[in-house]
Image (tube, rainbow, N blue to C red; front, side, top):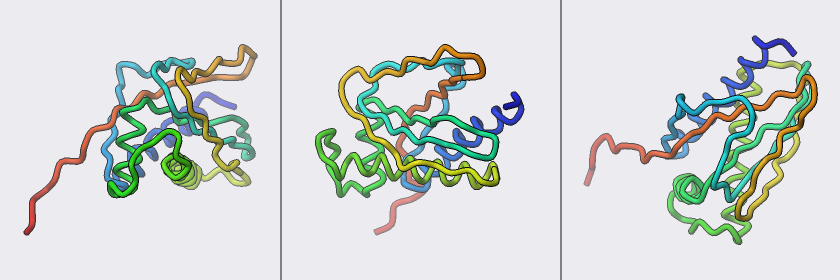
Amino acid sequence: MGTEKLAVIVNTFGSSLVSVSKEMGLEVKLVKSEVSQGVNVTGTCVAALVGVVGGGVQGTVVIMLDREGFDATVSAMSGQMIVPDLEDSVSMSVIGELTNMVSGRALVQVDLQGTQVTPPQLITGAGIRTIPIQSAGIRSFTLPFIPEPIKQQGVFS
């Protein structure tokens, strides 16, 4: 895959995460100074993996969250109706749904004909990390985001 096509795909997944999160009530901000090639993540307690195949693409998209990110995401996406709990399947399903929404939006925007995604695999535990594959043609990137509460535009009573 060409570098230009890869850059479009990576950027589209990043912008999809930002827009989907915002629609769900959570502002996330890309930490541009920490964008890097390879996998550079610490403190992860939840990971959601989606396989992407077709349209000249083959790979895995992973959303990894630390505890703060997990709590903020579950709370925001459920309207504070679900208490974030790593042992609760409903809390974990929120992360799966976020991953589905981000992947779907990104792939529609990139418009890769014939591309399919797998259902998300959810992994939880202390110290989750990814060991990058050392093989020609395989590239990994880290796009670190931090959650920020959405500022209220006004208070109505």
